[in-house]
Length: 285
Ligand code: C2E
Ligand code: MG
Ligand code: MG
Ligand code: MG
Image (cartoon, rainbow, N blue to C red; front, top):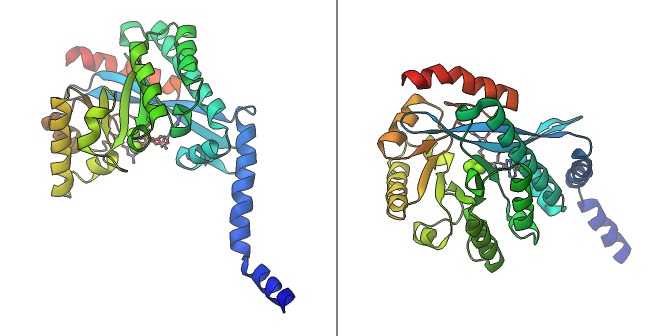
């Protein structure tokens, strides 16, 4: 009887479930190799001032080109990298690559180069004991001022964690700018904003997206911008896809914008071309 129920239970483990488990295990193994195999690269998306649209900086975004699966989204592999301990090496690769790119852009473009480089940090990275030293080393080897680096963190990880708070304070003390990414999602609260050592916030693209469809989201954006102004925090709207969204965010007082309307994430060559193509326009404006 026991044997029979045991077998019955075994049958309950359905093939779909098993294939999903082995799927994520194989992706995890591939992820461990991806850096060595040079399958990871970094692309850059512009941030612009509102309303003038002058270049305000660029954000580094990692890309994984899997040899069989093709492009895998960071939304899928960053959590996996955190779970299997690859995030430290991956994060170091992105930070070092981004800082070296920043230095290259200064050399190649001079005064037209982006004034800052933004790099995303995930929760696991903010808990790594060596993070602050790694940031200092990356800045030094790129001959970059701490003020030229913006580290983007998400709100859910910043709050209520003493270790993370200490790390953020150390980065602030070094002079690195901190930006609160995806603001409005997760367990964010306008009431807690003053407790975080950030210098700017990025309003999540889901809010920008609903700007002209939902009064609720519009009011929340207005409230967020007002609180940010009171706290003297910089403001960035992400996911701007239309001219109307750009105009409206500017009219509401948001300082910077980012999104497909201005420029998609690009490799360095395309970014340089994008910046150079805009130069004459900026001189006229
Ligand atoms: P994020 O930091 O909020 O980055 C913005 C995401 O929105 C990027 O997706 C970008 O390509 C996308 N995006 C930008 N403008 C628009 C737009 O106008 N419309 C739409 N629909 N999307 C837009 P991506 O590159 O797939 O990255 C997704 C997330 O993965 C990032 O969100 C970030 O949280 C994470 N991520 C990306 N690169 C890294 C990295 O190097 N390290 C860490 N820790 N996380 C990263
Ligand atoms: Mg970001
Ligand atoms: Mg964001
Ligand atoms: Mg986002």
